[in-house]
Length: 438
Image (cartoon, rainbow, N blue to C red; front, side, top):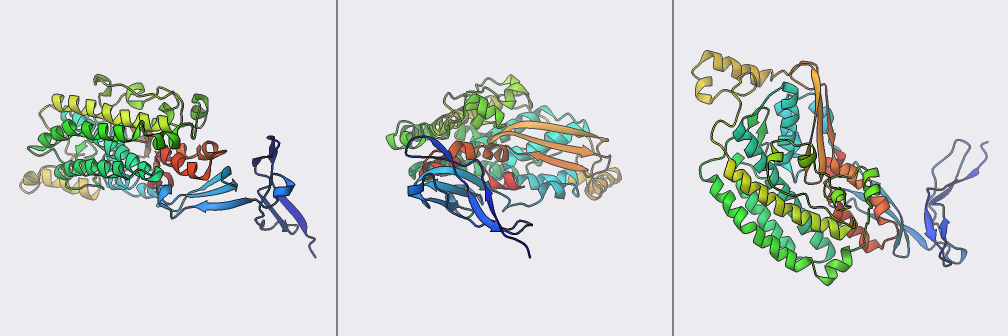
């Protein structure tokens, strides 16, 4: 007969006693047989007279303030967070494995479902990786159009972040302003590729479609009017006493801590680290545009807000320059082995019909090799890695998701803060669960 033994597991949990000194407390205490057994949750305590005062609560996975199906298990001492354990995986779709059974262009719709607030940016980033694998040089017009698409996508993502974060903290009006501007950008995307959210805008070697006549007039109108909305949000929030009180000094990450956790994007720059893939490892001729990288000082929720606000202004600067330099010419490369021929040729020329058939049924075949391309996505450094064995489908496809890496720092950021502060800190990370779970 197995003898019972007490199993005590300490998970580096730290509480603060009334004497002001930190004390380690067990998170789970239970009984099990010789082979171990399930631990029974027991409320830990920091001092004998407060036995049982700690409690475990769940935020999510069905909670609007978790920005997706994220579950945060919090151990609380009163309203102070002693420990945070994030649980992910509720939205796992197996994108990377599915990609091994799809042609390269067939993977692009899956990138829409990755970070679904940056669909066009994901489409273009994947195409850049595939084109590096194929050894393809895109046209000058396609290069500028891709810059336009990526910066509009960045603005969309930051607008959703600002609106939903404002609601989390208690301001409703900026949500309405930001989502109205988001609709204006979606109207532009719909006029360009016929879709609003899941765009599948790019192709290996070019884009799904060129912009129609008059489309640039709509973009110019957006570039002209959008800064006024940003100014209104700035006046509403930046010096608002409630906003400042709910964001300043929360979730602080020093430059060393941010680098150690692998943070990127606004999360890293808010901590004072001047790193932007567009500047440090340029792509799509970003080095030829005149713009600045906003960098914070304190690494708290407030600085992350300021960095993202300024990033939207810098995106407008880039868009203005892209409109001015957009050249004429084809948007797709002239290579029938990769790009489908025009419909009138596919229905009238035998050679074009053969190319069309082989592209659709078999897919383009890159040489044997591997490629990795990283871009500056709205949430940080986004990378796509793919390996080719010479067939029409990648042997391996891997995503480097900034949301996943940035979220790893949330236990560090929320420790010692109040329960209500967890909502603001989590919002400041700007996560999308489709990118985290994949």
